[in-house]
Length: 152
Image 1 (tube, rainbow, N blue to C red):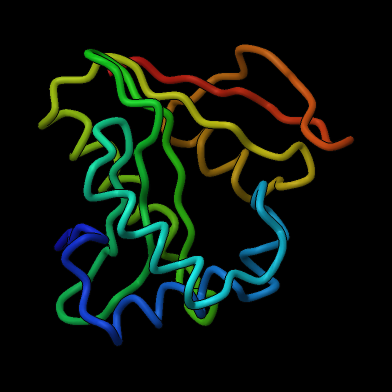
Image 2 (image 1 turned 90 degrees about the vertical axis):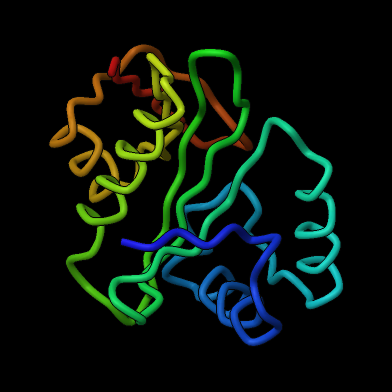
């Protein structure tokens, strides 16, 4: 697996990521559900250059981009994680999750947290397969959110 920081993406790679993120199959399970404009996406990537608590990566298998992983709320020993796959690919969730685990181990983090919409059963099952356990529930815009956690 190869990780490429969002701040190092080419124009075509940035466009590809925005296309995936705006795909209904991805957008449905995000906190931000509106279509993201090119200007909004560029501003987001520009902010990442000076943001110490957030890291976003495009993941490649061989030379093929397969998905995105992210780390937010980064602290000394923990981070909040997220991921989404190229919406036209299937079966890459485990590869993306393993990339998250590998990166977290390199950073010597002890705890990973994930916030998952209660309606996203595929994500819940993926996290559970990788040792994440339900810690608490919350709400966001009338939706139930599951907070899952894993120790490393």
